[in-house]
Image (spheres, rainbow, N blue to C red):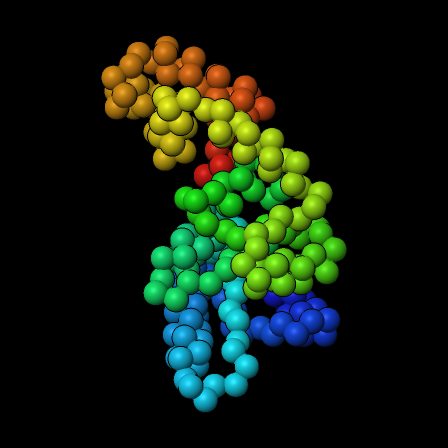
Length: 215
């Protein structure tokens, strides 16, 4: 229903058209590969008319094939696939998550999204995002920019060791495993984790992982 609504809105209110859609990670990868190859072939023809432009609107949560589970990282894996493909295109995250850490992670070099729009935004914001990325610009919905900037400041304020520990925690490692890998005491790792919590404004590991799109 959401995809149908987005398609109709874009068709009725802008020049953008839906060239393909998917409900699972596997479908999304297949559809993108087919579309990007088609767009690249069309653009290379000397007699091609007005050059088309491809952009991807990606939900942060995508189902695994054959299951009813929804994992936040599946959407990010789709973006990674698009960005490392032979014919990458701009990606807009369209999500119900509006946490500053989630937005920052989506827009980071690790994931590579070009724009971020929440599902509770006015419908015209999605069109604005598409228009912006089509001109090579990045875009974040206006009322969530402050959350993004606060978290970006927190990320930039991490020490090298804090960043290492954060990366390992986001990879699912326990404090004990992190301590062994970095040759530190468990108590030292715990102290670092509390500093990281403080910088991100959270109080638990679960909240931190949610902010980084890992829970």
